[in-house]
Length: 76
Image (spheres, helix red, strand yellow):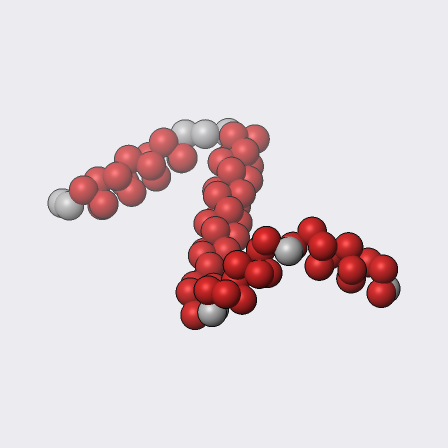
């Protein structure tokens, strides 16, 4: 039996012994972890979009960020 199957079987045995309240807590924790992983994955996908930007444009955009935002607020 490989490591993954042993681990899975061990977890199943432990889960079978838990109360409904504890199972609910574990389920909520797993949902939270899944959500964080999805969020991290989406963020990392966005990070790749910056690699093709022109360096001059990127520098101008980041160095003038506060001024650009202030100008946007005045227009709106």
